[in-house]
Amino acid sequence: MSSPRMDVKYINPFIASTTQVFKDMVHVSIAVGKPYVLKPQDQSYKQYDLSAVIGFTGPATGMVVLSVSEAVILALASGLLGVRMTRLSDQCYDALAELTNMIAGGAKKDIVADPPITMTIPRVMRSELVSYPPKLPVLVIPFQTEAGDMALQVAMTHQNRKTQSPPATQQAPAAASKSDRKQAA
Amino acid sequence: MKVLLVDDSKIMRNIQKKALESIGPMEVSEAGDGLEALSVIASTPGGFDLILIDWNMPNMDGITLVRKIRQNDKKTLLIMATTEAEKPRVLEAIKAGVNNYIMKPFTPQTFVERVKQTLEKAKAAAAAA
Image 1 (cartoon, rainbow over the protein chains, first blue to last red):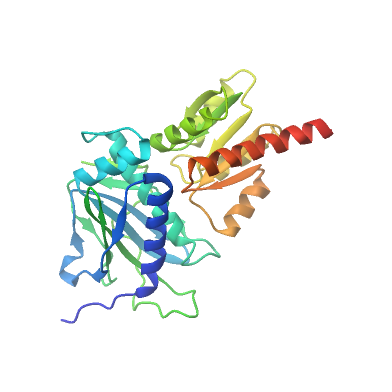
Image 2: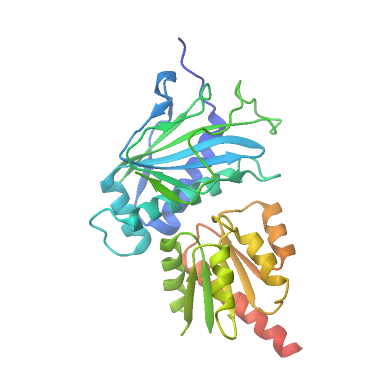
């Protein structure tokens, strides 16, 4: 079976947005690694311990996931709050959700601006695998922070941009829901 | 000055609260969504001078909250502080009655500047009236 093609048009908006969020609000140094596409058999996937999921609807559909280790979210939450965090707490889950929210918001405006893409409320997942829409390539953008590695996973498609060729299928997000900002056990 | 912060992220409310404290003494209240904000507003004698509102929240989103407030209150200063950065969203918020718009992410300096700008503009308008 051949690997799905990487839809490169989604890479730069998410890298730019993540870099901006870290510069303005997190104050933790970050470097981007080489993006790659998940293998089709990995459509249910968990890269690190904690993930925050946001779904996209409207002119583009899909989802974005920020996946981090415990050590990384402690460092990021500490950076956001300006207070050193040493153990996982609701504030860490809140920080993960809000970071994902800002990264997704910053990226979506550069993908389709009018009409705007609608985002779901972030959902934090602690133990279960994230299920991606079937047949939609999942782009993984790895980042290195001073506290460890993290990854942004993007599965998106849209048909409005004349200069870009959309992937073969259009699929609603499977894991993201319009439920309250919440954490799954 | 009485300020209400409406955001479903407590960490974001803390960041905003800390930035506001650098402007001067403020009495800050908080709400986690639009519905809670309406309840806090209704139970606060004299209301608020300034309300900062996130867009994407559970139960009642920020744009609905702005419209509900503006139904009978044209005076309270409203600032939308949100990740929604597209022009149609900004125009929608202005049409609904916000006085200013702050895009997330923001630096504390940008946040404080926008709040001060909003307060000064309102002060100048009141002096001219």
